[in-house]
Length: 388
Image 1 (cartoon, rainbow, N blue to C red):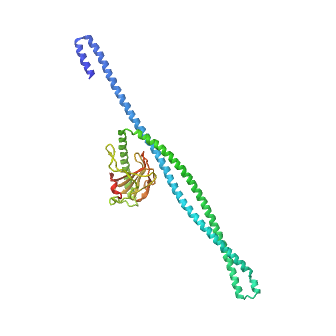
Image 2: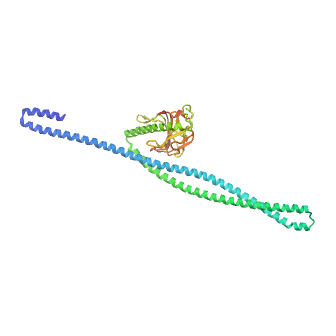
């Protein structure tokens, strides 16, 4: 507008004064140059802001990648700890059983020694009344025959007792060896468990730092809202892939894939705890929760709500380590925020079977379970499906 005003003004001046026209033309050139500079400046600012936005997105992506690496490492360590604890528990029971068996063998050994002692004493007493003495004495032939038979049986019993005692001694030595080996294995597992727990603690601290960095990246409401929308898009995309895999698995399934249609109000809770976010409650802006979040201590077992096949078991941005189970007829259940998963894609699971351990993955501030039910791809309120 300013340039147009000066051009009009200069045209009028040029009709009246010749010299003034030259001055106006020069001035107009300066104004146009100024406008051009402003336009270039605006273009540069737009480019700068776009570059800054791109840089922030890249930074956010890098933080998410770091979080994923850390949480997968935590999942691996947590899985190792669970396996070690189970092995230690099995070994402890085995050692206890071996100790009982060893005690029983020792008692048997004591009894066998007493029996052998009695047999030797009897044999000694019988030896004092030898067949020759009986022959030269007044004993008749029938008594001599009985004594000879008794002596033979004593000898056989003593030999058998010696064999049994030797066998018991061998068993005791074997039990001692087994106990030594199992106690050594137990100590090694306990030492490794101690290292794994220390490693887990270190990784959890590093993860906390990354979560704080992530929260800083998402501090602006609009940016956080965009991230949540992107997370939902990723979930929908993974569901689409999982449904295709589920349809293929259903054709080969050896597990009942009858869907959830008749089970409303009958499904067991995946974990027992207080609900901190309900289905449909506000999440951010116009977004609402598509599932429910149940508070539970970290490391608690997450149970499948019904029979099915695992079609997804991996880390998903915004949901952390997630397990998805296909129940047939388009019904699927989802379990997110886990510390580690105990199943892999293709595994058959039964209702109330442990499939994961509760965690805070996906950048959550507190441990809990994200639980969602979808029917033919559409989220539905999971609460009415669970037992009261």
